Amino acid sequence: MSFLEDIKPVLLLYVVGDTLTTLYALQTGMFYEGNPVLSRIFSMYGYTALIPLKIGFMFVLYHVYRNAGRYYWNITRYAVTGIGLLATVSNMAVVLYS
Image (tube, rainbow, N blue to C red; front, side, top):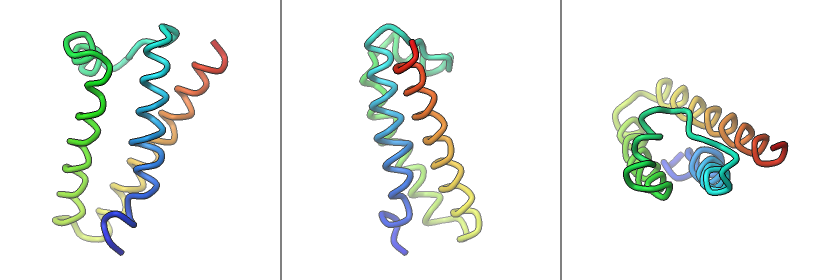
């Protein structure tokens, strides 16, 4: 499998899902960023700073893909997909039920 085939769920849930729902929730004012590092970055550069951060993370993910064994790559990509799923669902719950 290629890198792009391997990261389709990551792109869908962690990059697109989490990014869109986070940006929407933050702009509505119903949500605050609980991560102190991201909160500080958002206060300095605005919410759209999340986009270059996600792009930068994709470079880190590619580094893991190229340099880690298949076993560790699979753990990494499934963990990031799971985090993306949890973040997207959590953000949607805030938006829908607030």
